[in-house]
Length: 196
Image (tube, rainbow, N blue to C red; front, top):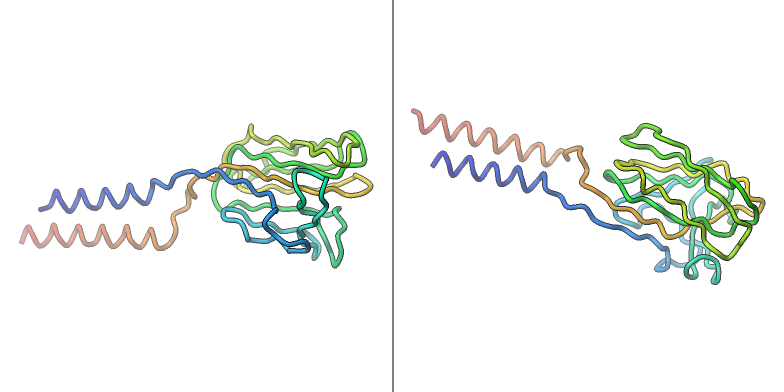
């Protein structure tokens, strides 16, 4: 009977630890023009700085579809920070910059790996307002957040098609810890009762 209890405990432990990775694509096409984007998408939260928000703007012909996001403070300004905070560890991260009116470095993105700033990557513009430009961050693993900032394009910039693979969150949830603790206590009581 003791072996059955130990096997059950190991199966529960493995089930809690084996959370599969999932690929995510965020394209904003399902949201209405003017929607403030925060936590509508599983696995990531969008925020900004200085009271700004990330807001859907519908401008067909720019980017991939009709919608992308820009920063706004009352009205669209497309010039402030866009911050993504992932719910777990992200890899294969990429997104597109849309609406550039300049060439060279038009913005920067800080990549945080395991909550530590790992690199600041240049976002390039090609002075082609309607064609999206790939921002490829696939070289980074265990990405916990991104901070897009220092937008120098005179008309501001929009962001679209965020792609990433979200791995399991390596920090156990309190309920998981409680369940493991309960299993360990039950197993020790079962062993104690059998010995007596």
